[in-house]
Image 1 (tube, rainbow, N blue to C red):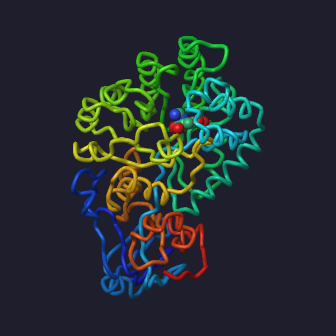
Image 2: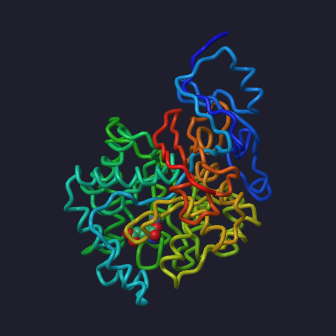
Image 3: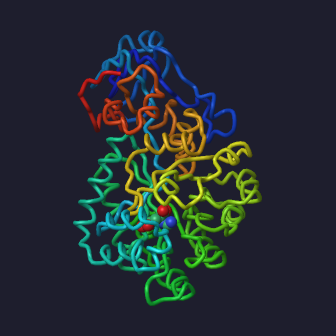
Length: 433
Ligand SMILES: N=CN[C@@H](CCC(=O)O)C(=O)O
Ligand SMILES: [Zn+2]
């Protein structure tokens, strides 16, 4: 029967499916046994979903009568799922380039924070910013992430720390979700820091009695979509009890728990996440052995952020190998924020391999299916399987590992970024491998 589909990507040297059995995440050895088809093709239908993926020969035979809006000949190229960035803070105003110099001179993250810099500096500028300016900068940041291969990204609020600005940030994220092709998972992070002039207890009360109820109203009225709730659980920020009460209230509203924990001090955040049924805990530089066991058992994903230790230098590198060996679902995120200005998941994967001793296959699984799991989206994203979103990358390379191996080389290696079967980035520069 003849039919019309949106896109055929044919004759790719490699098609990296990641997995092909409807797995929601990968752990341990399965992360090193990614499903790869040599000489393969992919078909994406007019609904933007994958209709077929398989050997080029089989797809040719199966689709001999079909027509396509677009055909890409991927001879000598590789096809991968679009990358998933499981942790970013992309909505903000105010440049913090000066803090990079302070940190290079030896200041710690908390030194900068206590001196009124860090999150507080960004809060001041974000509160004063017009929504249209926040949206313009968010758009250009998301386009940058997209050019680096990200097709699904988590975006946090958290530079308002009071009702009005937190809602403003979430509305800006919602506007981006409606107007850009990139897939967004939005996170309310009103407990990102204790606002100036308030104690942690007062801030917790404001979140529980003012911010979350208003969020609930807006969500129920269909005026705002929010997917996750986040808290910065850290000494001098939100302790374990405040974190618990905020996360529980968010869960009650139907939000997925996905929070910052065990970053600078061991807080037992991993255990709390496991106990509350969190989808994910991010950072975990200071996770304990007990925390690792609890997360593995509860199937709470660990979103590891290699840029943090790289940029802060004094901070420990997350124990990726221990977590992988224990069977924790390890995911990756860029942690894009004014402290860690990194838009590139290929660079994040490279850092994960070199500094956290992950294999390239583990890093790719962590930046696709497992990152999608951390956002509750692995049934639709994170692998190239029939009925999932047709979000993929086509590389100017005959082996997919070039995406990670070439540090900072993604501008040349990524030829196309495709979301739901439409080309959203076409880099037609020819490169020499
Ligand atoms: N740790 C807390 N939050 C961010 C940093 C945000 C900022 O410094 O503006 C993080 O994930 O690294
Ligand atoms: Zn963060």
